[in-house]
Length: 149
Image 1 (cartoon, rainbow, N blue to C red):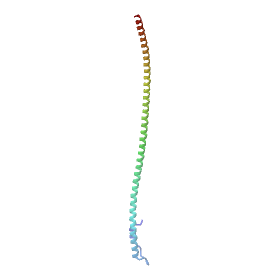
Image 2 (image 1 turned 90 degrees about the vertical axis):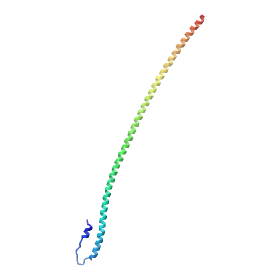
Image 3 (image 1 turned 90 degrees about the horizontal axis):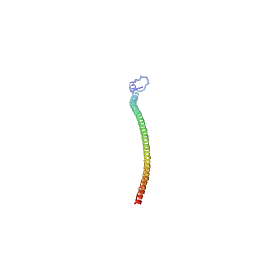
Image 4 (image 1 turned 30 degrees about the horizontal axis):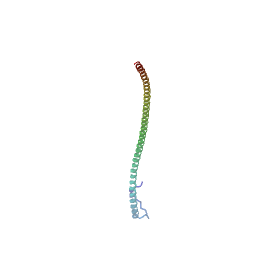
């Protein structure tokens, strides 16, 4: 690539009927000044592009890291929700089982109490019958004793 120094150091051979040296030198000075400015700007732009590319690479790396972090967080959240649902299902099943046991125990207690109640009713009936028989027997004895008197 042509540099500003190449232009500055370029010498042309003299020929008959050549151009005016002053005009050529003046034009070359303008070309050199513009070319130097463009050359510097080009270097600065290349540096900026390099810096921007580094930033883009850094941002791309950061984006990938954030995407991975987000993916991990999402997976973790899904795992937590799944575990919470499983625990809830286990708790519900255990509660339902305890409820069934309580109902069965209560039902057994009711059956037992009903049986005891029926047994007590029978015993009361037997007692009433025996007591009535005893009273009737005592009444007959009393009547017999009163007749004798």
